[in-house]
Length: 180
Ligand code: ATP
Ligand code: MG
Image (tube, rainbow, N blue to C red; front, side, top):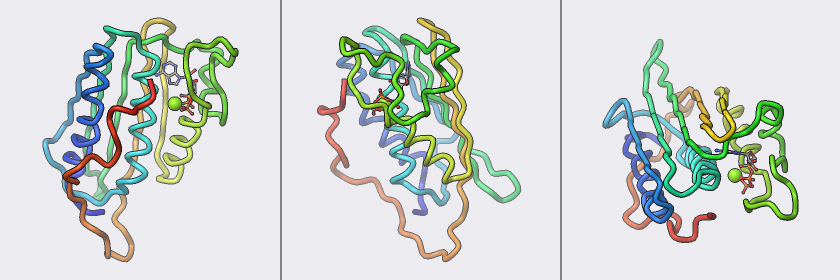
């Protein structure tokens, strides 16, 4: 699509507002620009951000803090996106950190574990980031914080025939049935 990617992100983030309220999480979003017109793949970006955000909400206890920072930049006529999702939840120990992007990998895979899921979210995120020829890194400290950082180029489409993004009037997905 061609359109305002900052508005698009704002729209996605706002769909997590009620979850934040429900979990009493301090949810803070900052973007380097109020508006940024560019070409972007809304479907893929939405999958990346909702997976990172739902993990943050899943692995951060009540009264925690989740922060999102988005930076837009144009370097040599190419637009870039830098996205950081930080939480102060349970964290991931250094030994297991390198495996979290593996398909079906979960730090706690015991039957009695506290967290639902199948372990495919981050594998998908990694695949999508690779598809964009972007970069994803993670830093974490157990019981302190986890920060995912995604760097993505936003290339112009070759055919130039792209739909324009407009904010839908009804949410594209329900905000109440989000996984815990
Ligand atoms: P699914 O995404 O398929 O519902 P999942 O969330 O368990 O399941 P991934 O999103 O792939 O799977 O994450 C893999 C594992 O990485 C998680 O099970 C968890 O152990 C760890 N992890 C991911 N994000 C965080 C985070 N923000 N804080 C702590 N641990 C995390
Ligand atoms: Mg997940």
